[in-house]
Image (cartoon, rainbow, N blue to C red; front, top):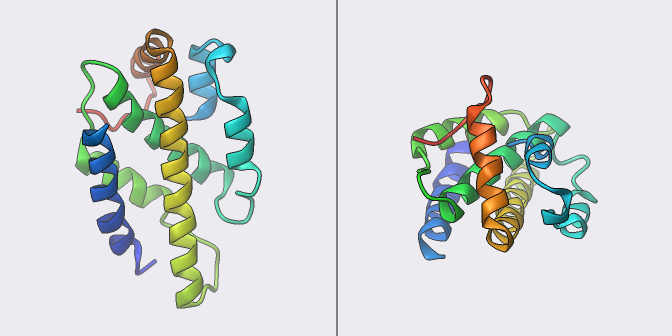
Length: 151
């Protein structure tokens, strides 16, 4: 998609600002007590994602959002911007077919919205129970097949 580099140029500064200003969901849930999850927020977020992202894309964006949030909440984690950008590019390489230029812009905005919303929910969960959240990050990092974007 030709606008992917524009999307990255927009997203990375916003994410960096969020990181300095203030995973798959299955992997996180397995490492965290379910009481730590903001179930209502997650339900609202995924309610209308059908048709915008595939399940694999949604999971990959959640993974990226989780790892970005970990760098804010937990000590000893730093986001590798090059890995993050490459993973975001790979996760969003394929959008719905036959989109007009305007539809492509709307799709990119929807993708960024979902990534940002997931990031925000992970920040809220992590700051509510940082010990549990950081333990889930350590467990995720220790998985042999974990795809991390940390340095």
